[in-house]
Amino acid sequence: MSDEFTQRVLNTIASAKRIPAETVTIDSEFLALGIDSMDAMEILFALENEFDINIPDEEAHKVRSVRDLVEGVARLVEAKAGGAKPAQ
Image (cartoon, rainbow, N blue to C red; front, side):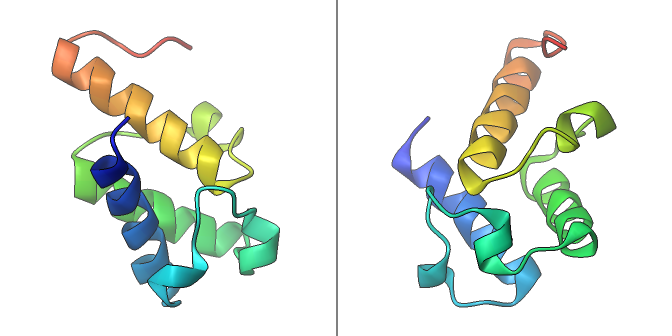
């Protein structure tokens, strides 16, 4: 995944959470950013809109960090671009 892609995800998280973009890094944990389950849902919806993807509930429940989220979104975007369903 490119730096530009990662930055789009980080910016989307910051915007949805209404926190400064520079506080969100690839190594950030949700807990450290103050992201609770309601915030996480808002972030997931924002990412779905940003990348025109659908994040399955079972995938969403596995995410605990920004890195998990970036990697998961990348897999879904790649699967969509390739016309394949993402691996479950």
